Length: 458
Ligand SMILES: Cc1ncc(COP(=O)(O)O)c(C=O)c1O
Image (cartoon, rainbow, N blue to C red; front, side, top):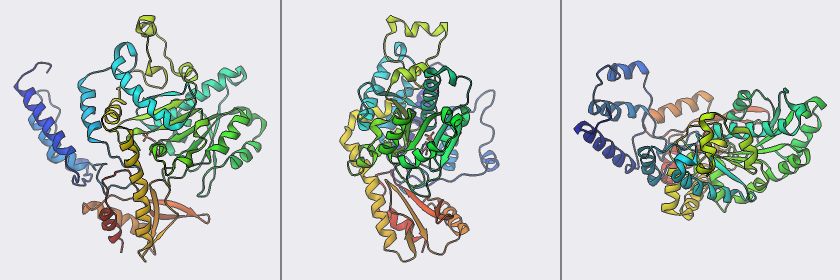
């Protein structure tokens, strides 16, 4: 298994050939899931005492199993938050694995962590946060949000011993991503959701909500989470006025820009994020709008020491890493994970190869595609915009359709290999309505792709 022989050479060539073919295929088939029992019937048991051999296992993956997945970078995959990793980043993901780097501590991972930190420096510069701000790459937005709120909760308890033993309280809007509420559950904090009825959360609404808290709840409030690009509609909360309230009330201000963070690099919309520079922590997912392969999130802190106080693990076996001789930046001290992949390396390589200007252009294209799609929707009498596009998200309705028709249309387009576009819900005048939604990330999506999808709704 660990020796170098002909089987290894053949397997390596198979893998390299597959990787080259895959990244040079701009329109991979839009795969679809199959029932587990169907896959089992075709593939059979693959893990056996003697092994089935690299060639056979690889053939099963290439010919059957990968076809039961949806290529998230397909130009007509416009559902959820798609992805479009650069080819440079994908190839360097292979290099990252091949290099076997432990990304927890500088002592072992220094050269790789250096690469990550170069990429992180650029991310931090996009936020405009003050000197001393820095961050680390995580497995995604959920882990980044969790790392940030743990840091916030620890700081709240450290600053006042009365808070120890009490359950914390957080405030966010009902448009925040589900992971924010889920992570509050993980740390056993209560969550108060401000209802925003289709609009962004403002400082005024936040202040009114805080003013209504009972004294005992006000004492439990330790963090506010705003969103810089909601998943459903691309809406950015009023970050500047929320920052005013957080400063006045002395609560931690976290901004979840997991989806929208890439747009910080886009001049056309950068002004919408004014106030982000005043955050205590920010989440950005490079695996969404910064063209990194899965998985790569990032958490950024204004005060790294507070993050370190919350996350640094202690153990006699870890002391050497923090010794003088091992000196350097230790990513594991600033987020929830110890052993970690240096998952910022693919982003670094792609940034180093292409330069940041090409990133700005590719992100602007997503915003432009949303505007183009909106125009095409307005030009078709059977369609209607639900609201103007925000960032790269477009919500629109097919006049007269029921929720079932949206669902059947999604399944049919997926089955026919045309596109994956899924419905969502939007509240208008107090009522939830099923509507259709585009989220553009991939700069290879064409205007023709949009026409093809919209024509299937006629
Ligand atoms: C705004 C926002 N926050 C958090 C997440 C969760 O990120 P991840 O899936 O990388 O954990 C998402 C995912 O779509 C998101 O859009």
